Image (spheres, each protein chain N blue to C red):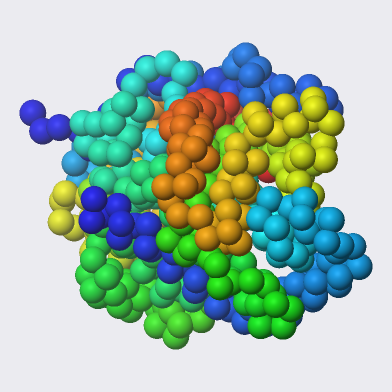
Length: 272
Length: 271
């Protein structure tokens, strides 16, 4: 049986409760009691795209950050390409491309190219290989003219594309994308989805785990869908299977039904 | 090993490229060094007497004594400040998370981020001393440059541990570092930066003997002003090396623990 690209088993993540005033000073040593993830278990197979769908605060970003080795789980295990995210974090990072939804994290006074060269080389690309890959991705993400400009002068959408390009620089086996098309205009978002589908996922070896609130994006990209609510995994299956199980025809209704919201209340029940 | 050196160099180039975009800073710092050097020169002219010169460890002018003390304080400040400053910048710009998901190890990130600030501080010191020598007669003829370099290197190693501890404090508590300011405060009084330790009361001289900065500063003055070679400085260098050997592994462990703690509490990117 082939090894799962991502394997999450009984994953629990607790945070310390938020404090204000002088007690905030002691927060690093507070007991962790606030539940962010509550016993999550699922797998992403090699070459598969799994979408995470959930309301704000459901735990999607926490899960992605654990897989990216930026958070330590409280209990349970998370494996990337067979490597434990805590005990073998370096091996995990070798396999990963990570895009954070909100925080793009570039050096504003360096040019886009200098930023990409820096991060590419930190991911063990040679300078020439990094330069070559940057040219390739710049064409794909329409970054050509922006490459030689300081990042501080670029638009939010362009920085978003730059961040996606960075995640793909070293051809990672596993891509973790947190709201990948959040700040992109409709055309750029469509192009990015097409690029992911036709260029990145086509090889059958790259696996994708992404969180998104854009339902058309989820329908287009995801082989399967995981619905998360309050840190719990409510469902994980193909979209067609979930539509069948819930007896609904749209992804929005699937989500509302699974998370326990009243579909009829949202759309207006004709029987009332 | 080559990979580590390459990564360290990457961090240096990153910082150099960023610094390059603030060109005026280089000019401003050179002018600032000129005024700083001039200030020490005129203070020395005001207070210098044959008795004062006689009471200084290497003899000579109070100008040379105080300028070395001042530039050394700059160096110490850099060693203590660089790590938490780099970390704070990375956290606030959002690059910290993206650095931590690359294949670079944490020690390489820390050391790499410190190279440019140390080089820049060294250059600033060179400019200070060069102004002093060119315009105000700072005596460079006696300097033993190999010993000076050895003292600088060992000083960096010795006090970088304190800098890494500062960075650990920043990770956990997000702002400030009372330990660093206490250490700098104690050192500015007891380490003999602007006046000889001998004028202090006995109990402060005892504190001075416990402070490694005192030994580093003594060794710096002895090599730069008195021409002492490495062999003559062995006692001071040995104390500093011992200090580094104890503090560097301890500080790296504390930093790793603090980082893990922020990964547990989810506060890595909080400011």
